Structure formats: structure tokens, C-alpha cells
Length: 373
Ligand SMILES: Cc1ncc(COP(=O)(O)O)c(C=O)c1O
Image (tube, rainbow, N blue to C red):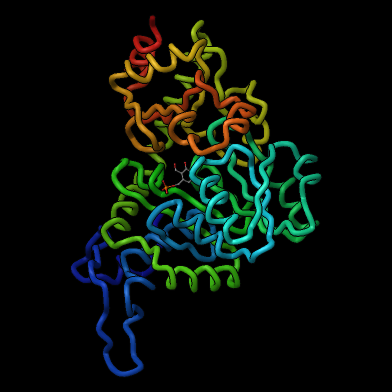
């Protein structure tokens, strides 16, 4: 699984775990000479190893490790000139919408949000100033699936970049750069880190031109992942496949169980064959992950469930080994305009669960007691 930037093999003492190069600067062997590293804002050996691993996993030409997912998304935003328009999946992570609507709009970039699972709607929504499609699939939190091949066709027709947020599935289940995307962003805080103990973000890049532009901005703004955090994410990635398989297995059991509960009105999980995006997800991804959204029969029950879970934590975030349950209306999507939220069905009865690696029967028992009156 390791990209192996030559670091582990080349390290003295045969260390099998990548050392943490906790240094801000590197001494030069002589004038005009470098060890390959000069200053950690630009590059650092521990971070370099992590970036190589990410490039291997995402089949990218380059990957940049940032301080958070938002920092990675912010870096991509810097690619666009004033007057550009970006067409986005309508139910993006709320923090992304906040960044686009505040920082993006202030810089003169405009955004519109459509259901990108509707190919004709995407085509109709392109403007003459549109420069990119920004996609989350499955989307957050309503789990709509966007067809990458169809998006690539449209992007080629209109000369657009495709940026895909691959946080929910990770390269273990889906590799957007092989499906037509130009850039992949990640909140590495989630499945990649995997233990709810580190913030991180990535931009994985196809092509030298984009890599040069983004690296220039990266070293200029300094949103670089510190060495210790790089080590933690590297350690997390070592168990990515094992964790994701277990989390997905648990999620499938929970989705099937929720579907049969009288208190549950709807279940949104791409692993259920009746999910509208099931076929497309099967075509472009090797799994459906472990994110489930569901609607209960009243706001009262939703609130009670959040306050009654014991094994599952009522907390923002996702992807770690611990199961978390979120109230998107108040938390992850609190900054999304109310009309948009209501149109998408992100209402007071809507919950999102990130399924962890615990025993599935224990998780179901916890949900059962929390759903009860
Ligand atoms: C899909 C998605 N993208 C990006 C982010 C932002 O990542 P971070 O919290 O690491 O800044 C999140 C955070 O929840 C997310 O869920």
C-alpha cells in the first residue's frame, strides 16, 4: 500500500514505521546544495511519504497534504479567477458551502448548486463563465450518486475542470481521477486518519500544470500538514482497507435493520439496491461505504435518539472507528440556507450516522433503545 518515497527503505536502522521529522528547517550541505528538503512549509520527509502514499492510492500525479479538508478545498478555490462560475452538487458538506458563499463570492467567483445526479440538469446549468464542476458522490448528507463518466463528457464539451470530494468513499472504494476527475479533495480527518484524533486534508492532482499551480499556492499560504499529523494519517492509512471493510459490513446490517423499523420513515444508503444511485455507484465504485442517513417519524424522536445513544456518540465528523451520529440541520449543514435544506429534505427528523468498527449487534441494540419512546 505504501507509495514508498524511498524514505522507509533509505532510513537508517531499518525503521518499519516512517520517522517523524519534527524539524522546521534543513541544513544545506554547501552553497547551492540541498538534501532535497529546505524548509518544512514547502516539503518535509514525513509529509512527503504520506503524499506519495496518497498519490499511489488515488492514482494521482501529485498529492498535497493540508492542515484540514477545508484548507485543501480553499487551495483549489485559488485556481479560479474573478468572474468564474463553479457548478456544484447541491448537497455539499455545509462547510464547503460556507467557504464558497463567503470567501469565494468575495473574490468574485460565483457558485450554483444543482442535483448533479440529473445529467440534463447539469448540462442546462452550465453558463458561459462556468469553469468547473464540483462534485460529492455520494453526496453529503442525502447520498445522491453522480455519474462521473457523464460529468466527464459534459466537462470535455465545455472545457471544465472536475473537482471531486472523495471523503465518503476514499480511494479504497472509489478513484475519481481514473473516472474523469482532474482534482480530488479529501477531509483526511475522516476515514483516512480513521481514529478521530487528527485533522488533515488532501488535494490529489492529475497533470503537471495543476500540480505546479497548487504547489505554488501551497507554499505561499502555508497550509501544510505538520510532521506528527502526517505520521498519524500514515498510520491510519495502514489499516484503511480493514477498517472500511468492517465499517461497510456493519453499515449494511444497520441499514437493513433501520429499513424495517416502524419509527424510521426513510433510509438513505447507497448499498441498498432500491437506492436510486445504486447501479451507478456499483459501476464506478467498488463499495458503498459506511455513511447512512435516515429520517425518523418526528423531530421529538430525532432529538431523543441523539440524547439517548450510549455506544454511539452524538458528534460531528465521520469515518473513524467510533460510530457517530449527527444532526445535519444543526451541525454539518447548519450554514446551508433554510430553503435549500428543506428542499433537500435535511429537516428536523433527518439524522446521519457514520458507522464504526464496533460489534454490529451492539450498535443495533443501542439504536433500538434510543429509538424507543
Ligand atoms: C465531505 C467533507 N468534505 C470536507 C470536509 C472538511 O474537512 P475538515 O473538517 O477536515 O476540514 C468535511 C468535514 O466534515 C466533509 O464531511
